[in-house]
Image 1 (tube, helix red, strand yellow):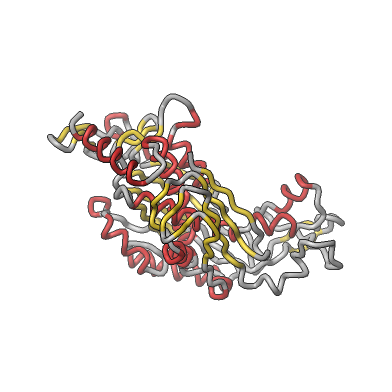
Image 2: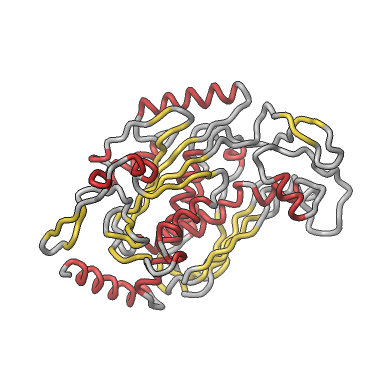
Length: 385
């Protein structure tokens, strides 16, 4: 139902994105998208590039008078330093420039170079860069605008950096509390843990090292019935996991209590069901993360992801030269010490895209007004089932 493509290199002219499949009538403007792009640059531990890139979107097509047209939406975000890299990133005939052959451990450099048969690692690293996420955050901002019409809201927060764990009272974890995450430099809801995370980042920076961590993304207002159990590729938890896992440096995704459930007895792990007159079925807990059998069950959808430390280090590791096979130091590109807060924001867009796609599957329709009518019918049916 919903399709998204992006293109562009880290130091090329622009990142561009095309989003197709949304109905007519969704409120969209550049301010909505720019706000999400700004949030993507947030977080203590980011590189100096975050101060250089303003990341302002240009809506090229698919929006008129502040609403979507139902046609493909094209978006462009210019790279601020593209002029400095014009020769290196030239799209014309090959320029006389030195090739980059210093491989960086834990990057796409080696695997990508061998796969595509190139002796210049820059051919790989420019597209493998997390700069690519500008495109998906731009598209995700529009997906969020669509979901907001149906009172679906998505928030995120940081649970850990390195070995520092936030203490979260899940009984009080509501939308208003989650909104406070953006006010913290680590996007962490535990102020004491946030300060410890900052100290860990400062220490890692002094040593030329980097840190990873874990974040959580939560979607509120989800109706019962998105996704399906009938085929593997229609299960919503699988689709969410794939979308979030595709974010650079993400190495693990869990839905709800995830791996913790493996250490519980069945009587502890289950979310018991009850019924409220006029409101429908509810659960006493949400260890399943809002999805059972690949289908949303009416509870908030919860996903957590583990991000590895960014492998580009200012104190580079020993490595190999791609061409002469000699031992060298790995290449050093400008990179973050810690990007877990930003990755959480990107994951909001990754989740928003999947949920928007699933909602379109459920409701159908070519304009937002007919979809709103169908949604109200769905909610009444579920409340009275």
